[in-house]
Each structure stands twice: as structure tokens, then as C-alpha cells.
Length: 424
Image (cartoon, rainbow, N blue to C red):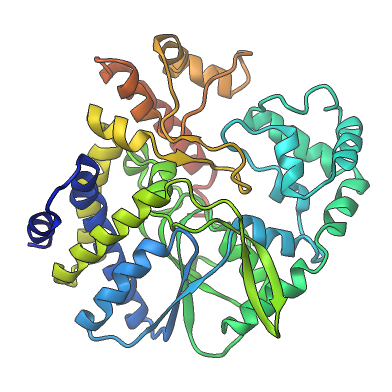
């Protein structure tokens, strides 16, 4: 009913509008309904939707709250991995090298040093001490990043530099969180997309609070966070392997984002703390604003059904697994052009579906890709935020390559699950 009424009200509708209304609007609706149900059942009085992945769920929750008969306060909390980690670096017993040396698409030594706000001279010094003077701009594989992390932990100056650039970050971040009520006694939880749960971990560390979190999906449990404190809607740590093979984190975050720039930090202005945003707005702002309009239209007609979590998840899987795991040519073309960056500083935006050709697809073959990732073969692969769309955009016969991609993902997730099977 909500879909039909939204389509009728749209007037001149684009293909992008149709895809959003058929796939993302219903998913965001049931996810937000699940959040409000779980919050009410557990006695939460306030929910903090984290910038920027909580923007769309907040819109849906605001329109659902009255329909569900709940008076839970809904707030928008400005934060980012970069902002909270910069503050956390000033705290003792913080693994600065481990936090900075996190993999990503086209990750380089220089990009990682920027995460710690190191100057050019400091970066050059650390490059010399760690053996990276002639490789500062080279793209690093995950095993190389892990090796660099080990080296940085043995260089005292690295920690000194990172701490020196934290400056007032810690005081301002904690002041902002206190102002927003995170130090209060009333029961609350944060809402975020999830994946690794590092923002929750950092905020918990900064505030000294045991914070609950509701997530769309988690691939790992954040270290130091009790499993009872977090709940996942669609993907659980080391489980839901088949769902994960047909899900795309990068695409989900790109679509379900906010129009403003990322939070760079916090400052005190006229006695109040506020978030400092990047001067660059989200490059997908026009599309996001349109999608927000469509979501509001959808939610006005949406009637909650209060289903069980498994029903919500199965419904979500029917929509996302096809769209993300086997996109049509038009889905891959239209949504693949959205701009994306998985680095905490958003340096170097690119199409979420990287431009692959036949030669690159051959290199992405399961056996070859696995050999490269394990360090058996010395070869560079072109990373893509949405590999399935890169495949569909590159060939009229994508089936074999899509199977190879699923095989690779399945192998990686099964390997990680096996490594943690005693814990979960």
C-alpha cells in the first residue's frame, strides 16, 4: 500500500526513484520499526541516531513513533570515526597504531598518517623509521597494513606525534557528548549502521559509559563491548554468511547517508559545544535529498505490522540480496555512479562501482584473487566498493564472475567465523 501510494504521488518518476521506493524505503521502514520496538521493550527513553548513517532511519522513526504509540525521544548525534578517534588518541592505553592501520580501498601509508593528523615532516620521519620512504603512495594489501601496524608500535615517536595533534579534541568531544546527554542516568542507546562497531567502542571509551547499540548489521564484535549491549537487525558477527555474500556495505552506506559533510571534530562556541563539519558536503547531496523526500512520502502511508525480528530480516533479504548481489544493468549503472570513499577522512571519492574491464574481471577470478589476498601472488587488484555492479557494468554475461565473487566472500566470512567459533 505504501509503495503504491508513493508511486502514485510521485508524478514524474525516475528509474532511481523507482529503485529507491522498491528496495530501500521498505528496508529502512522495517529496520526503523524494529529499532523502536526493541527500544520500547528494553525500556529505552532516548535513541541517538548517529551521523551520518542514522539520518534515513531517523526520518523513518520520527514518522513511525506516533503510529507505534511510543514517546521515546529521538535525537541526531554528530559523530564520525575520525572525530571520535582523534579525541580517543589523547587517552592513555589507546591502541593508536591499531586504530590508524585499518584497511580500505586503495589504502596507502600517507593516507594512514593523515588519520593521525601527522605533518609532512612527521610523516617523512615515520616513513624512514618504518621502511616506507620509497613506498608512501603505494597501495597496500591487508597483510602489508598489518605488518606496518607492528612496525609503528615499535616507534615511540609515532605515538608522540599522534598525541600531540589531539590537542583539545578530547575535552571538546567529551563536552559535546555531555551536553547531548550521554553522561545522564536515563536509559538510552545509539543507532548506527554498524559493521565493526568502532564508533560505539570509542564513544564508550570517551564517556566511560556502558552504551547500548542497535545496528543494521555487525561483522565483528567491537573489542571490549559486551555482546549483551548490542543488537543487530540483519547481519550478526560471524553468522549470516550467505546474506553477507549478497550484501554491500559500501552501497548501503552511500545510499543511506546524510547530505551534510562528515564531522571533523568539535569546538566550544559561545559557551556551547558544537560539531565541526567538513567544508565539503556529501557529493551525493542532490540524490540524498530526493531520496529523503521519497522516504517521507513512503512512511506517511506505511502501516507498522510489529512482526518478529526474523520476519523483518527475511523480508529485507528478499529485497537486498537481489539488488546488491545480482543487480540489473540499470541498477548497476545508476547506483554504481554514486560517489563513495571508505576512508575515515573521505580522501579520494570514486564511483561506488569501480570501472572494471574484461582483464580486471579475469584477475578477480576466485583462485587468483585468493592467491593475491593471501600473499601467494604479487599482483595488484583494482578494488571496488560494489564489485557486483562493476562486473555487471563490464560484461553482458556476468554470471561466472558473480559466482566467483560470492565464492571469495563466502571463503573469507567462513574463515573469520572459524577463527571466532569458540567465542560465538
